[in-house]
Length: 199
Ligand SMILES: [Zn+2]
Image 1: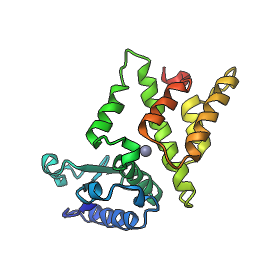
Image 2: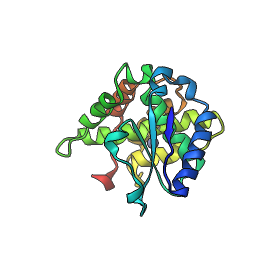
Image 3: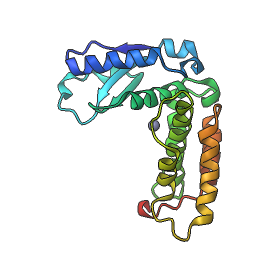
């Protein structure tokens, strides 16, 4: 993976170098389709920054954008790079391109439809799948309990059965080392989405 580093801004340059170092040591990078990743250019973009005049023409660098905050920890960088690894993993995508993969995920979003909750659940599950695998390599991004809370909300009263069901599925995802987006979607559809504060 090429990491686009021609920024003049010293902060972005420093972060890009950090990302390069983390990419070289990433414990899951051997799960990526090498040909696909070799042709991928990663562009580092800072969120909430005041350096918009530093950003490059997106049309020239459409491949990958890694959005980071100025203070993104190494753990967050490991996490975000794992999304890219999964996006280039043939088993995970079932042969879909990155664009096709995100089309599939976006199709699950429809504000007039319960499917939107499936998409939100899917995003938490994908994060849990990533964080579970990284934790096996001593990289702690977030706990399974925090993921569970994202799915169940804080108000656990009267939802014990639903929460047990959710935890069972989440635990399966957290411990898995080989899942596909289709499996994650099928699990997301089984999880009772009951976060009252997002409804
Ligand atoms: Zn994530």
